[in-house]
Length: 255
Image (cartoon, rainbow, N blue to C red; front, side, top):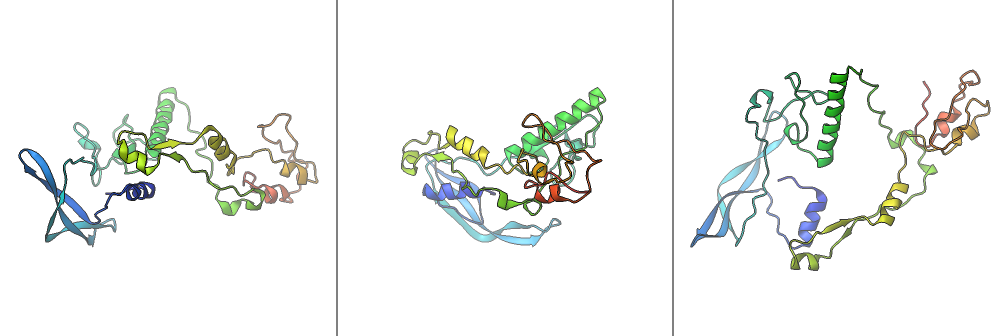
């Protein structure tokens, strides 16, 4: 079962034992109550069409894990009742870059299209909503998302190095005493502000004024209000590239 690294670390901290390459196959009961979970050892089989080696059972490797209660959390799968025609491939709905399926008027996202995080599903929903609005209002599509600016396009020396904040969490001892206690408390208000201040504004102007200060040809005007773009007077520009070279966040690009 896939798990996020933080979840694995927290489970180990709470004393949970992880059985790798094992799969549940049933339960053993006594007097109407579960006393053990039956499982079998697995091994990685031959690669499938995607190149992934899927686990396969090892014959004769069955074993039991004593248990007084069992919570089923192996995985979930979508209920495609009534939507079978949308499935393409291995139990997934195939969509285009805006979430539209092969059936006109139906969009999809989240776990019916791929395994991913909740935030990804939220993004899929917004993407589909924007496409639906464009469909019914006749609004043309925009220029798409802003280009992804990576660190090789930025001047990292401009930024002050700051350590990442860690969310507040309940101590392990207290968690085990109250299983219904909320463990992760998130960031405090001060931590949220500090995390926001760590933002490097990749690809977005944040009014550092460097382009304006270094332009010797007065081709860049300083806006009256913060948050407004710096107007370029192309008639004055000589193409020296200083503005692009000195922009720390990669917002300015010479073309």
